[in-house]
Length: 329
Picture 1 (cartoon, rainbow, N blue to C red):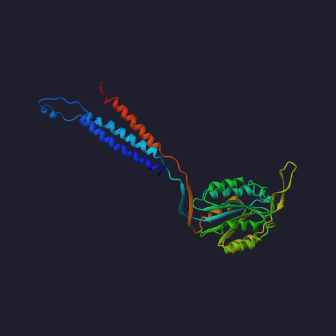
Picture 2: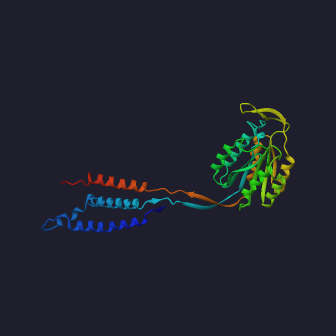
Picture 3: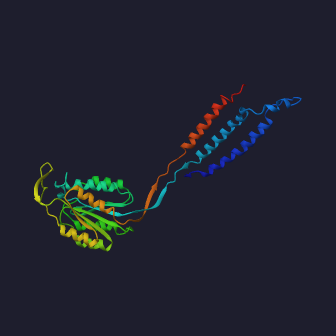
């Protein structure tokens, strides 16, 4: 906590002369009565009400102190805070070509991948996660961040048609490498999820894998789709909806395996959502490293407790003066 106006605390010095005035007033301000001897009153002692007379003044001084603190404006400090934690730097690289609408995974490949990816991101507490999507070209949706809410929001927004159709696996991996190349984490991972073979883009998948290997980045490649035939979109209807038909599932598993092997990662064939989940679970077993995490602390006034204390002190003073300390005019 910090004070916006700490110089206002000098007003607390006003309490000192007020106490002096109160003491002097107590000595000289009460009327006296001359009597031959005070001996008959010596054994009477002091009533608790006599001591309570001073409580009213004490309550007012405490209320004044609370008022001074409020004027100083106590606040929670507003700053970027650096903390250290252990985690992994991960870029999810997701194929969003039209074949990802194939319905061999329910409800389709893309939605199944999005659901598992969202569950995975929700479970990340100490990791940095980024998101790259690709079709005919690659695009960075979210750079590395520890704001998992932002990543989840972007995953939910993913839809087909935002990028030219095609499957540029090499460009997708290269874009993910570019996001990870300056990472200081020991474990740097690309989760590549695709359902086809490279047929677009500038860089070949194996060349992109070589670059990833040079940067110490592991590729966990996932081939999404069943074997044999699948119900895939083959044309667009006049109303803008896709027309589906059964087509052979074509996937370049050999290249995906090579990419994973080059980088020390693994290749998985995901024929259902459970296989996808197992891939993400394995990432949790990776070696973790210390990461610097920046958090923004937003400031806010915290004068409310002092204001409540001020109100309580004044109310108690009023109650005392009109009950047990009530005087007759």
